[in-house]
Length: 133
Image (tube, rainbow, N blue to C red; front, side, top):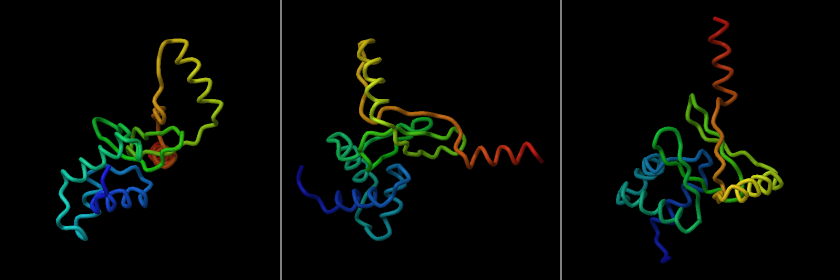
């Protein structure tokens, strides 16, 4: 992969933003200081970086695609209410067991492919407040 200043800017934006942003979010955060940057360039570079394993692509709620600079083996939790994505560190033994189960069933699990869905603590707190009112 050849060096590209725009790719470096996009990667640095992702590196400094642990919220698992979408391509639109990355583009909007960069366009003021980089007026020549196009949304298409952001999409192409994020997809390229994902394809070669520099970053990870995560399917969010609906059809949204989010990107993660953190490529070490971990799971993701997606809140069904606010759609935020959280990293969850999981013990390596868990992945070994999961891979054994998958292998027994003729399946391959992608690194970082474990996605849990539910309600985050903030949304859960808000829901409990609503019930009390």
